[in-house]
Length: 149
Image 1 (cartoon, rainbow, N blue to C red):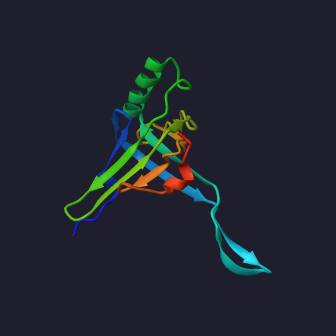
Image 2: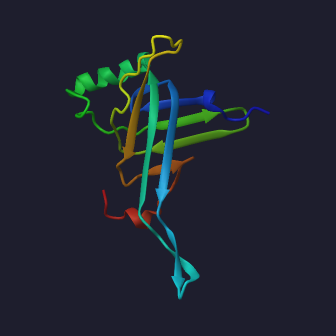
């Protein structure tokens, strides 16, 4: 039975379809256990953040360069709403992140003895109250984002 693996993913950064060398997306949810006199007694909802990193080869990084050129600079690039989608005959996974703002962390790494493609790392932060959706299900409850648009 075919399972979802890294080769199955298509990554859309807004209108750009890119092929990633590697990619991460992490959610930090600071919800915590409530305590009374040092004893667990329910929970409190904490703040949330999400961030990740995309590693692109030069051919795919060039697509982002073209978008930055059109915007006027890398820092002027508008936020992206990336979609990470994978499907096999028996499984499907669609992760959406909203309002992602990219930075460049590893612009160039040269190893004259290396036999690998040149790669570029782009960390990003999720900046929209729409936050993350997993197979269409929002991570945050609608009451948490009410009035934030």
